[in-house]
Length: 110
Ligand code: FES
Image (tube, rainbow, N blue to C red):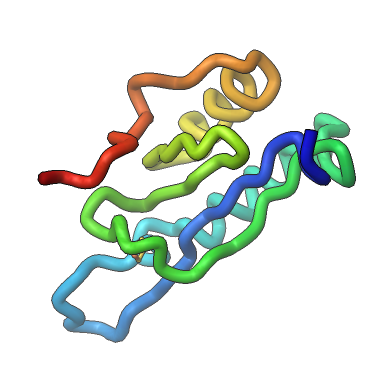
């Protein structure tokens, strides 16, 4: 096992108004990441050997966002609200099951 059992990266990138590509921050990814971090802590899951939820810059999946990726599995998700994050935490982090309805493709489009 790595230093963390699960390491979550939430894109919180915000582009300038009028930018050509969307920004995850405009979908409240910063606030939702803070929600997930607080929930993980309240559940006693954080810390070395546990789970960490970090902010990240643009992960270059902007059109599919907001996005987060969980390592070591390398599973990508999108989400829209707190209930989606609750489901990812409960089913993926705690249950070891991938949440297929929120999962993004592993492979880039051809
Ligand atoms: S702005 Fe979030 S992936 Fe690019």
